[in-house]
Length: 525
Image 1 (cartoon, rainbow, N blue to C red):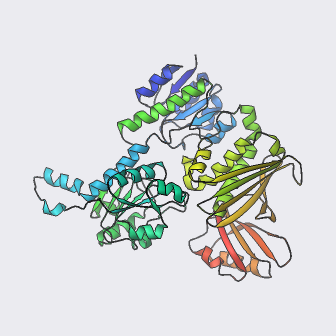
Image 2: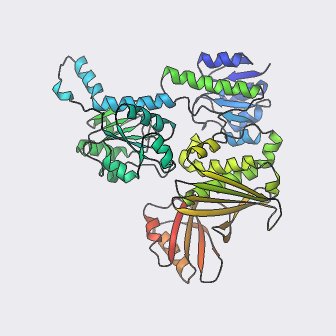
Image 3: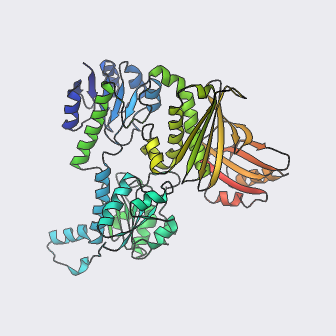
């Protein structure tokens, strides 16, 4: 009988499911050394956020088939090591969807009717009705920033409450937004017109401090903002100032840049409701995530696929090891071409050539989609749901294969059409593992992908490289490497620069002002 180790407290409902197919041992508060010592005899490990599943733990788990995290994130699991060893890692990305959506709606209503302040007033012996004149949400405009599963549920309930809906999500099609009763608009228009703004975004370099002094200044003085998504999306100092000056009418926050919330101007700001990250804190959500992950562990132990694997489900370890370099290349190229093409990608063409086209290509396509969507969706996209997420966003996927060997033994070309136009990127593996980009938009190039990259399309003319270098230097940006690709002398050319750090704000627009520069893009991998 298989054995399952549960090293963090989980709901009994999950344990009951596991007990149907395995011997279940609950041992919480194990030290790292104790976990390494205990894990060799177990076929599965079920955790929450307390247990750190390190490389040492995974390598000691000689019989491990699956690691299940009863929650959304898997940052406490060494996923690459688990993948290399053929161990499936699963989570519960939807277990707290309803809880988080309902909390956002509760915060909106509590803020609108001054419920926390009124409660404290009555408990202090007062009966002050005049100080707590509220507003109705009926017929008000709700701006939903991020139409994922949580944002979509918020929109559905708000529509039933009689609210008008605007939505901003660069990765959602207009058709999907219309199905939810939302009018898809750009962010600036949403911020100007919405009476309520609710945020449902991951924190990324693009969304950090998305709500700041400038964007707050575009909102109505009667606007109210809710954030139950991620801390750091709102500039908390700017928000506190806007509330103190009456620039906006109210705010309700469940998440913060630093948690727990210490000294903060938010604590003394007027017209604000603060809760201690309670979005997933319902009895039902805790039961749901335990059941969800327990069912997946049960299925894998029975030889069935997992539905929410964050790495590669259903492949034998030897097959996974053979495909791993190609999958990493596909994911990297997908991430790259997705950023070049822009947020709302309409189509992805996956072209495989040589020995790559001779293998099972479906995992490669899925890896490319995962990379394409990962910049926006972060941990919400994985190898299981990438195809579903792409379909929901109306992304048309075309796969072509050519088994003939040309310049390289195998290559992968991804073409994507998005809000910034159509772009393509081709990559190959050197030495079986080193990824090289061999063309950008059909311009020949030979560069390895790096964490921070700058791409320019420009006229091939004297002095332009020096001007870009000098401009970057004036902003204290250090160039690690640079290469230019061109088709003809003094025609169009592509320049690829690897830089040590992300570009400072505003520099991209300065680059496009340089004579001869047609366009410029930054990519963060």
